[in-house]
Image (cartoon, rainbow, N blue to C red):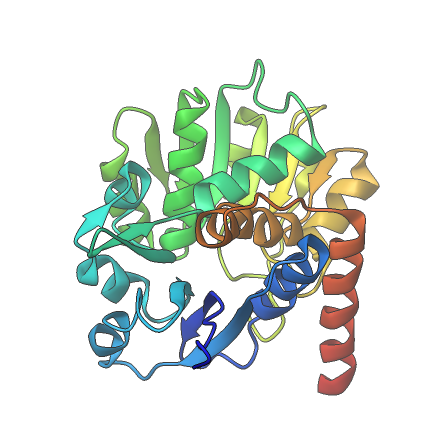
Length: 287
């Protein structure tokens, strides 16, 4: 009697989910590392995530990534959380261990790994940053900066109340600054991070004068569609060190893949080129 071999399978759950590039990233690593496995998209409607989460750990499904709008639901569905996920109250990576559903948030690791790879030593001697945005991504960025010893993090958001709320979660190092004071904040920082959706294709533009930043400052944008935002282009034109958002997407996928498939993949130029081509092709289709 033949025994059916069940290969490990992971995926990404969201609504909508067709736009996700995670299958391309993880599929590249599976092929490169010669692992017999799969990575799929899972279309999960709002309100149905708990039901979906119960499938994890069964029939070869070793884990999933979680994207909008389910990161909060994923957090609530977990039996256990990593320290980072517990602090952020949001989960983007799930797996089951000893019957318990575990959740992690790899955005912090992804942000820091991208910064370290692009601008080695970027946090050495830096103590003040400006973060634009007050959502889940901004929370991860503020947590990451606090972990690297930044002593003042100004959070600027169009809805000031949200900036105040986020700053309150990191009251030892963070302050909320009104949107209209952004220009005045820039000369105070060594680092500027756009952790909002501003500047993304389909979203309002992010109009900011990077000339006010100190010489030698670093400008980072987590937006990767378009690949090079107007803020990144302005920083480059000014001679500042710039960090593009695509790297964060790639690096945040590394720990999840390692947890599910037992091998730690690398973010290589070949992978970056593959995802860049995919983004550019999608941009051409929109036009």
